[in-house]
Length: 178
Image (cartoon, rainbow, N blue to C red; front, side, top):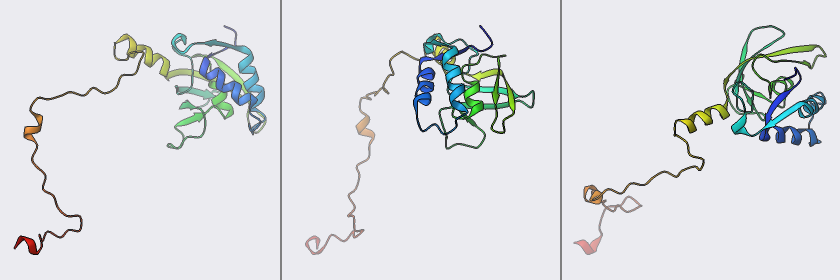
């Protein structure tokens, strides 16, 4: 795999295509990187995505210019969650990390015009790998199952009868009860 190659799931690739074609993408620096990613992408089904590749919803640990390691979850956009937990692919760093393999680096131009060297150290969690592991353990079928309803014989005998109380809070039965 060349230094520029990225591996994308069909879903991730489609999202990048939509971003590229969206006239409302406000950051002009993103468009060349989106085109670069699309042009060098190896597209795979989510079941075939190798472990250690950053995909959407992956928790990744990375370094910028050899600095301190940072861990974030790659997301599709702004998320109402604790600050610093997510890294949207609508940002330069988030987009740069999408599709990289562990140990792979990419160079991008930051907002201030300086180049940033971004290294993907490791993928701490990848939803596709977690899904395969659940399948292997027999914990997830390909079709989502509904919660099961279990009938218990004689269950109603244990229920106490409810007393009716008027909604207005008046428990006086009135003159007819006298």
